[in-house]
Length: 398
Image (cartoon, rainbow, N blue to C red; front, side, top):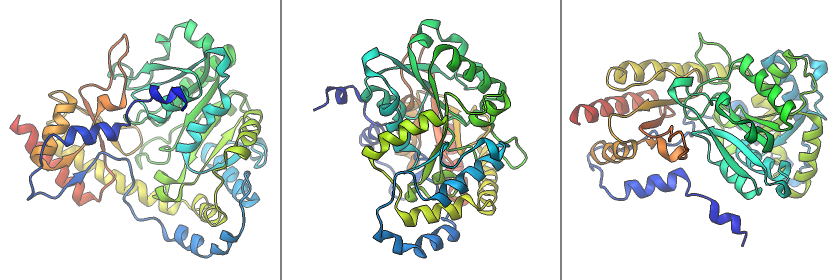
């Protein structure tokens, strides 16, 4: 067996299941789960119709690059969404469909990392645990950049020692952030691109939450957008990851794409010819329908805004939290230890939230996930209202 497997920590939901196994919830209350970021809004019919209408594609092996019309649709969406000139994005050179961002974020590190150099993969802390696992199994050392309240829950890149940047081969950023929803500014992204060029590393920007933002808010800036704005029009050292799971309520479709630096995309394509994970042809046609439509995305945003407005209004006086810049998570401080809060909330109110420390790691500067919980507002609004009231009841009982 690969000895690096022993470096992997239990996944957050494994830890959560163990935490909950020690107590028994009240049987008279239905269970409400705010722990998993799985969208519960209905998958749009335009996606399911396109899937069903192209089932004959199951008789074909899909190729690694994906069908031309899918890459062209993705390129057009990128240009429209992020204000990029159509002449700056080549569907063939800059875009590669993938089976959702999870597998792509993981396999990307296996392709990029030179394991002979004892390199570093830098990432936010708290973080999506796939980043850490990808680094470890690629033979690199993870370096955690804390995201705490003092920096609006964004990574404090100024605190990173130059010795780390010199060994860094890959930087994962999550923009908007999971779990906080904090968004990097255009200036911050430009500064990261300058660092990438100075120290010779690649930026992998996980932008899967970028289309969930307040209706009256500011659209999150994308890495390719910042890149082209600063004149880096070939997106050197910049790669973005997008998905239909959150944007289009289609987590089971397992469809997304990577885009950016054509030299990196070409090497990643070469890796994927052996790695596999190509999208079935019916899935590609369903993806074309999804990326071509914004009406369902706007409706999606309105539903999330309603839930944020309502839940924050109910629990805002009892919990220390801020409305996120984007995404569908609430990142709230807890009045007691986060794991104890989650366990007792389950025991008393039959509700599941995720302790912040399960999403983070200890560092010399502390553990920024401790004494926080992540709540995914993915359930219907009525269920979110019930959850908020239960949280209030629980806090008042402490």
